[in-house]
Image (cartoon, rainbow, N blue to C red; front, side, top):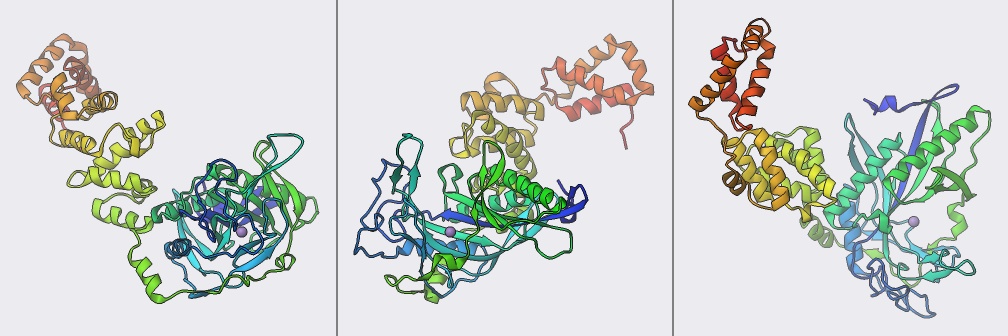
Amino acid sequence: MAQTRKENLIDGATGQWEIIIGLEVHAQVLSNAKLFSGASAAFGGEPNSHVSLVDAAMPGMLPVINQECVAQAIRTGLGLKAQINRHSVFDRKNYFYPDLPQGYQISQYKYPIVGEGVVIVDLKDYSFEVGIERLHLEQDAGKSLHDQDPNCSYVDLNRSGVGLMEIVSKPDIRSAEEAKAYVTKLRTIMRYLGTCDGNMEEGSLRADVNVSVRRPGEPLGTRCEIKNVNSIRFIGQAIEHEARRQIDILEEGGSIKQETRLFDAKAGTTRSMRSKEEAHDYRYFPDPDLLPLELTDAFIKELEEALPELPDEKRARFMKDYALSAYDAGVLISDRASADFFEAVAKGRDAKLAANWIMGDFFAALNKTGKDISQSPIPAAHLGELIDLISSNVISGRIAKEVFELMLQTGHAPAKIVEERGLTQVTDTGAIEKVVDEIIAANPKQVEQVQTKPKTLGWFVGQVMRATGGKANPDAVNAILRAKLEVPEEV
Ligand code: MN
């Protein structure tokens, strides 16, 4: 990965290129009911079982705004540090598609509910800001099903009318890596807020990706929009492929046609879908069935005061209160459950040790079993107890790994495991000395060697550990060995 943003330039046959990326993320609003009807907004269900007369666009039906969806959009706007517009307007975006029975999508065009904001994105080596252009509310469309039957297509309107937040970024992103990190951060923020579940495999979060390339320092090139990319990995692949395609065309003396393209996940390529439509092609006009949305300061303030601690603030607090590195804090706050788990373990304990255990053995164990934190076989209280046993020298770090494995297998508390299996660390120096004496007596060659090569002391440590089943306190072993073999402390 690039160390700084400047190194994001990529090589072509005739010099370097810069990739310019802007994203339009469609995030489904987490709500019980749809944006303009009382039908369920839940994912799945029997086809056409979550459909009101409004969603099916029966003549004469009138949309009624769902206040909870409005609140969710405002919460999201606040999470994006964005301007909340007191006045916004719903417009009709006119186009025909079988899964859009109204013949238009109710969206917001000139006056969106949320204006400019900013998202801070952290990569391993640097951070950058992505400007938010706007967030507007709109309806999702239904789904056309083409695969069941070669002779006909079906339409499922369960998704028709579900609330969407379209979050439009400025063209502030410079690589596939940055784009993936931006969408991940956006998803984290919305999950913290509880405004979108972010389940990309269920289509709750989809991105339209705008890509263009230029020579460093030159004006923006012509962009292509890749529609509806539905996984973070695919976003990265689509950008890499599309940038390369454009660079090849330009280097061969061609020009880029502004168009809408599709990402083919199987082939990892993009292909042309249609020439780019302009806003005026949609004949936007204010929806006469809906009044402009007027928000009061009190309503916004109430939502603002009830916001949870957001990822950036939590990260800063973890660095300050627990003295964690930016990277460790970033990993732990990447979802709320991990952050809460960490705090439950670390409170009143060695926080660095807690972070290492959670990010190391604990996450690895969850990964291996395909479980998430809510299904963890090890509760926070048990992991905390394990850290207490290490900190108070009851067990060594090495034995702790063994105890951790047993905790995973049995679900028992670590103190109980240590007691049952007699794993308590040997800190009795008399007992350790006895073992050391035996090893020294049995290995005269190594004793001679360690006088000239003090590094080989480690071999003796290993022998003592083996003889004690790993239970000897490593500090005590080291001290006793150094004294008896007359190897001075390293400075
Ligand atoms: Mn849209």
